[in-house]
Image 1 (cartoon, rainbow, N blue to C red):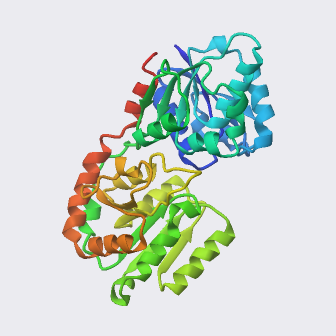
Image 2: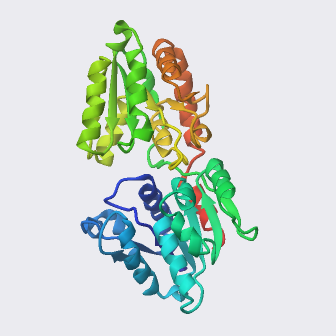
Image 3: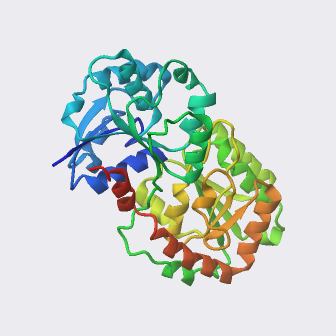
Length: 373
């Protein structure tokens, strides 16, 4: 059995897109490959989790990456005998940098590895704090293949970094778990309900545009707005939550914010909503490289409203699986009102969501990622 080594700083119990990507990739390939995961220990719960079953763990003390953690990542990389592995994947930028630091030291044979890029790290290594590493490291030394989670991320990479022509850049769309029979039957049965539930799932961060959604709801008439209930599921600071709650009161919006929600509970929340909405904002520091949450909503037949930011339009198909609008409160408000009134359009979009989600599978991603094996 061939041996695969995966590096990531985001993994269970940390919630985030990179962690989800790594979890699903590992679950897909561990039956065919001997997988070793290098990740932070966090609170130690990974060792007791089902996610550790069938794989080997090589954990680093600590939790979410801070810049002063880099020396211990370098130490961990130096401790590994890479000749024992047939395939090496760095799934996030801190380990990418740690590997290149070791390569720069020229201690032994150069480490050859593959690289997964999710979006924001591309700009961070060009314009952000991490750009200092690009000044003295060859970022692409030893890189065999680069995978990006969208064509948008690939374009941003090639525009901002000098990727050698010899290094292929392959788009591997993320997937969505399809361990259940995909069906929107319950959604269709409830589509005419007067209670109109909107949902956003994501980290409590200003660039997710929660304030845009609240303000856009505030533009609706009282008669419409009293039937709309907006739920946000995500973790973040108490100050950020209070600001959103205050904004909701000003705009007379029915708002509920839920944090520390587990996967099973989140599934039930998805099923109770009519529309998934994410009014992402343009940023010079971070990008929406894909938008996995749109697929997770689509799995239950839930159409989306989204702003045309980053790679979102590669996931949400305008006028097919939802509405993609400009980053503008008025346009967002009009989209909400349109779907509130036109329930037949929701039915059409819901059917399309089920069909579209079938095209995004983790097995397809794994096949592309490990094609050289």
